[in-house]
Amino acid sequence: MNISTLRQLYKKRSAWGLLASIDLSGCDHDLIQSPEAIRDFVCQMISAIKMKTYGPMHLERFAEGHLEGYSVMQFIETSSLTIHFDHMIGDRAFIDIFSCKFFDPTKAEKFAQKYFKAKKSKMKILMRY
Image (cartoon, rainbow, N blue to C red):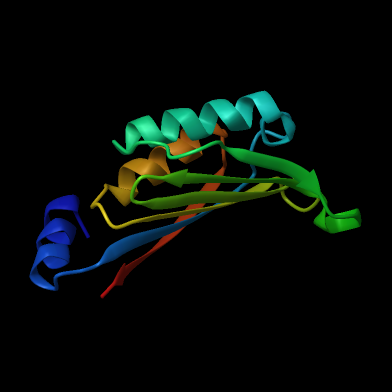
């Protein structure tokens, strides 16, 4: 669905918010393990989708074994951006952007794929009513 059609549907249904769930695989191994690169990505993504941060970014590396990796959460003025990274199985990133303000999810997906040099990307979009 193109952005114009998505925007019209969002308005027509009086949607309360939009969720983009982006799954990346085959990411650059070093990038998804770099706190500096992850922080930079979050700042650039928020700018790319024309949002504003609200409060500090939370970036932690935790868990054990095959579940260990970085997770990040950034509130935005209209909701949040969360990401979980998996460097053990396929160098993956799982990105969720939820906002009550309309944004271009395709732009977000393309930016994320390019930034993390992902070989594959898939996205699901959900409107909240």
